[in-house]
Figure (cartoon, rainbow, N blue to C red):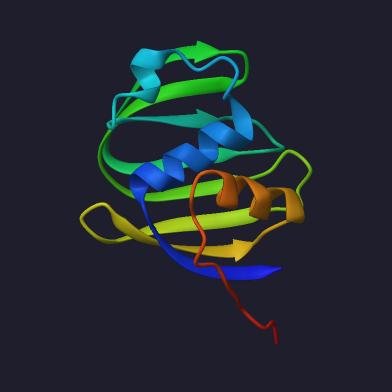
Length: 122
């Protein structure tokens, strides 16, 4: 399903954590609003676009990064069924668009994002 919604960067981070590393993210990274995560590989890529970015630590396939002034986040699920882009609109508010699987919709609802608008393709 193609979706469009507005959410904060913190909500986007919560979604990424829920979708990828809830069971092993160190609390210090989860509680730090400047720490986001990336997954670098051919399948299931997560990429953070920021003015400043520094790698902190890699655990399993997730690299935790300290990001200053994040302007975008690109998320592709391991299955390839989800491709989302979060773009900064103002401050920490952003617009999330793209193709979302049923599992992705569940994860968005789980972290409290409920105002998801389906977008007709074509």
